[in-house]
Length: 158
Ligand SMILES: [Fe+2]
Image (cartoon, rainbow, N blue to C red; front, side):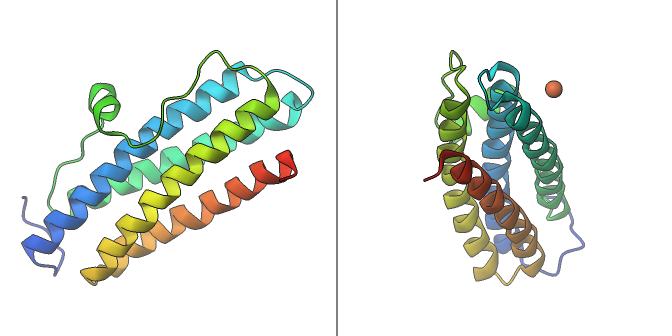
């Protein structure tokens, strides 16, 4: 671990940074999946959903960067190569042959749910160690992606 400006113990910083790196792997995986949906979507919903998926991807890219930089601020390294992500992500693989608009909506809603489950668990780790800053960072991500999940489920009318 690097020397950190954080007041937290090294044990706490290690545990939180490990959780942040897990969420970074998930977030980078989910970002690539959202882009695949953005590129391949077809159907009557295209005009609305193609740009909507892009807004999800742009938001998630910024969160991934913030999560990586928080891990390094805590004195750890950030891990994010494609090969690392492929072997560490907890998000199910995306069926890339999918084209139908509402099928993409359903697949992304399910994957955002998986992402949120783990993000809440990581926030709980930050809270256990009284790391308000990491918890706040994750709360921002969770709030935004709960809203995205609502947009998707509203599109499915379910
Ligand atoms: Fe694009």
